[in-house]
Length: 157
Image 1 (cartoon, one colour):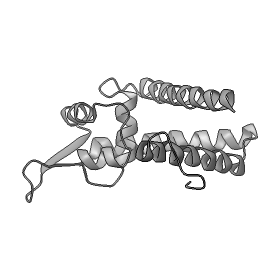
Image 2 (tube, rainbow, N blue to C red; image 1 turned 180 degrees about the horizontal axis):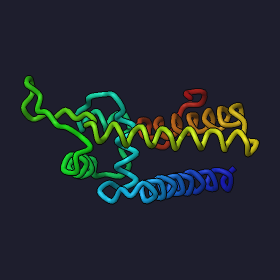
Image 3 (cartoon, one colour; image 1 turned 90 degrees about the vertical axis):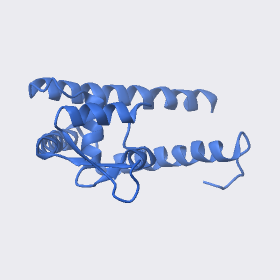
């Protein structure tokens, strides 16, 4: 069990890096030099929502530890609009600008092309669903490990 577990950890990290490279290539193809792959994925995940930086973090819409920096850069480059909360002046709400919405649509088109390619490659929706179920179980295991330390009660996932 030790080796399959370790292999899964490495594979998840490697898949994530490969996906970010796919996004980088798409941004290069579109001639977009003012946003990076991590920022474009955050942007895609924001979608039509209006969120605080804290909500971005809580929902897992970030990659890496510097959400504030990425939000600041996306705002500076015109992908996000920011508005200070009227109820809590410390809180800033962000949403996609028109430029951000256009990039989100382009990324959505990339995903659509990839889904078509996956269908043609023989990877079925059922196989992806099973893989996602397994990753969610692993996520619950790790979340539980954070909450309970090294001891995780059996059957708690």
